[in-house]
Amino acid sequence: MRRVVLTGLGAVTPCGLDVPSTWQAVCDGRSGIGAIQGWDTDGWAVRIAGQVSGFDPLDHFDRKAARRLERFVQFALVAAREAVADAGLDPEARLGQRAGVYVGSGIGGTPAIARNASILADRGPRRISPFFIPQALSNLAGGYIAMAHGCEGPSLCVSTACATGNHSIGEAWRVIRSGEADVVLAGGAEGSLFDLGLAGFMAMRALSKRNDSPQTASRPFDADRDGFVMSEGAGVVVVEDLESARARGARIYAEVLGYALTNDAHHITAPPPGHAGAARCMRLALRSAGLAPERVDYINAHGTSTPTNDREESAAIRAVFGDHADRLAVSSTKGATGHLLGAAGGIEAIFSALALYEQRVPPTANHTSPGEGCDLDYVADGLREQPVRAVMSNAFGFGGTNAVLVMGPPPA
Image (cartoon, rainbow, N blue to C red; front, side, top):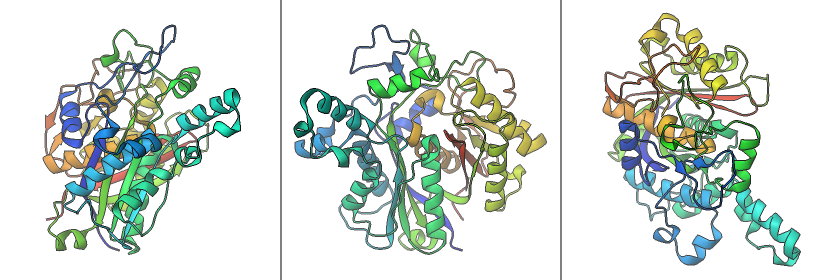
């Protein structure tokens, strides 16, 4: 089997419009959460979100394309272009038949569905946009990326809720290991911060209501956490065969050592006590990587800031790592970014790779006192410089789906 590495990183997030600005904010523990802009939330129980501010589609696309491309596709294209350039590949070149795209979305084009449903009800079928279906399809983010960069190889749209990004990168790892591709653009994108989308999560009582203090609303593993903060954006990485990367002198951020996926088969939204499915997924990922638990120094946790998830993920980590759990650095970067849903795994893989590349562990923003059952080292004291031999990145989604990536430092 071939070895697989990450050579390019691209992101659009509430914390920044590219990887350097996003990473700096996360390392500083600076939140990208604020009051919702774009519609009137007066009287709403939730009035905060992690919106991407300062993003002007006309900075990246002509007027016609900006009008036709759904927001999650715009984010995906911009993040992919940054990742391709960062990898030292020509953003204008066709990457060819040995290049693939595995970019998914948890919710995709639901804003387009809502807009056109309203048009149909108010104005009839003749006023429906001919671009409605392409705007609604989740796989169009990957499709547009493939066209933009001439990727004619394996293409797959994963849609596994909040585990989408991790699954996309893990499946890209598989297809490169097997020799079916040399390079894959992988990750996730989400652009569903609109009234119906927020109202749906609000109805589930999943969101933080800390409206008067948006920057401290997302507080993973903290005793005062009251739900996650819905965010938008994209995270895309260039996943590449090691020999291919070395042959062209590419910078290597990290090696993808292992990957696993499981299902809780328990409940559509809630993990089981002790999160046995997540624990099994972590063990399988370690086995896939050929690593003993003691080799992992940092876990980028799923850590959504919801009461149940944070407690049960902590229990699962302790079950897998035993006594070593007390020596692990565990942080949830969602304290700064909020929860990007299908894009979360993409940006968190970027943070995991940078932790390895720079030997620095980002903090859990807004963590002031541990919640019940949250008894690990959540890096609450700020950015930490320390040796990082291996990183685990966790992602769990509605439907009980789990995805875990294990990464190591750039090969010598």
